[in-house]
Image (cartoon, rainbow, N blue to C red; front, side, top):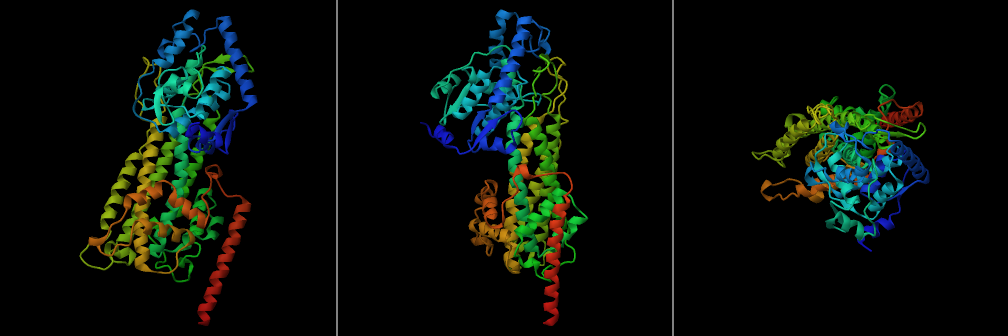
Length: 559
């Protein structure tokens, strides 16, 4: 048995598709964790019932878009019954407009599971055999080669057709890291191509697989990214000898926003045990806004992430096909459910939140390098002389912040086409906005890595006292890749290795082992307000902190 299929068969986690309960975390488990996929019996029953509606329409000779008519502006063309089979094959085979690098295997797996779940919703009207073949191919490790560009977001037709081609025995797929024809790939795992029935070709290609699948993976990455922003900013606070009044739990009663308090709570956990909690540790009554507004900036990111998750999960469990099969009414109706402009807009919003976090991270970097603000040698040089110290990193961060601003520009308004002779005069551009978010996450990882390296240098130069549980772990990882800069002529940092440690989750994993794991994506709530129970818990934390402050003041008076 191949290694891929062995891994799949041994996976402890399985995901059951019901059409109603798929989460972003489930998609990630299937795409990256190779969790096995199953279809619930109730879902298969609904699929059969929906197909019965389609078959009755065929027998009755009812004109139904995509069932017995052409597509797009050719909807007026009625297809003779004897040509329905060849039309179905051609509908999938003729989609050749996508181009670019093939999508990563994890993205293709995410596309496959999201489409299977939508089919299980039963608004599509396909046969059970098609849904089962799609899931069987996924479980067996048949990964179609899907080209990455070609959709305007009203159904990822070209990209989804690359998956459909494999299921009908053409196209290209990867099995056990070997690329072969679609028919060979299916045969390699004991499966056979399917002959499409009427409406099934449209069901295969008219889906937002790239947006939903890749979007799920990107949101998971952003959840990790948000936590690493917290780690970097916490270490910068220690390097700057910043004032921790910004995360005082007593402020929650007057600022009860969920995102804001999620950020503040995480910072308190990362900085537990830090010298900054000692009376008099802060150098300033008020720090620059890039330090003072960390909870606000990161809170906005948490809120945007929670909004994106809830919007995406609604789409994951929606029937976004056209035409739509209504089982109870026994009808097939034309709709615009494939339009995911709402998703495009939330990813636009998410990029704005990420770019803002990048912007203030860059400002913290500049303040740490600036002697006037940090009270440390200019450029964080080991000793004040004519050398630059880490000043070049300041330029790098400024350049990355500019790139982040560019990537944050809204995409959902960029469609200006008149496709299909004016019939398709609106599009969400959702795949592009998801791809831009993916690219921005990569830029942000590099900014975070640079902030951590600069903050670590500031911490070592200041030597203010013990670091927090989370920040101490982060500092140690920095030093495994990047030694303290003492002499620029004898400094050999592994910057790319450290950037990779930030991007691949090594940093967040190590910090989690010492200072608690980040919230699961499904746990992020908001935007909204804390409950009274949550506020009461923060009141208790504020009271405990006040007792500590009073005890410290009494000790200082006696001394």
